[in-house]
Length: 109
Image 1: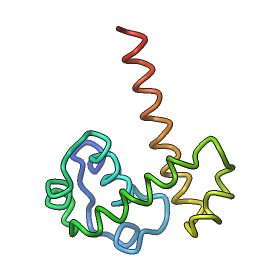
Image 2: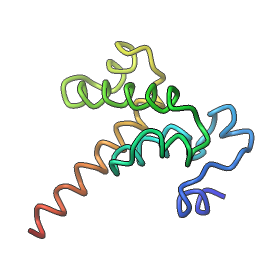
Image 3: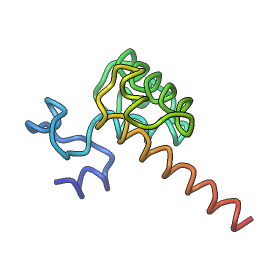
Image 4: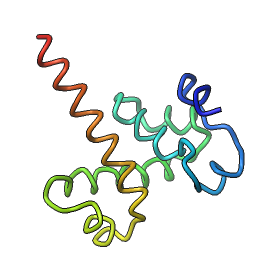
């Protein structure tokens, strides 16, 4: 299931994704990945079957984590922003993936 979701950029409705629990690919991660690809919020909302407001809320939270990343420990970021450590870890992983991709592009250029 995870492989299918990752390949197709969709979230299938099962317990882990509906309640955002467990190690499943979360809707937040998919939304942020699309944001990092510079896809406009209305398109992200349509593709993920979320409201634009929900997408904007996730993007805003991600931006806050990104702003504090490297300045605080993940646990401190979670406490400061009143987010779960798991969510902060997920956002940090996306930040690090994005930085790695930028390094690869700069290294090739």
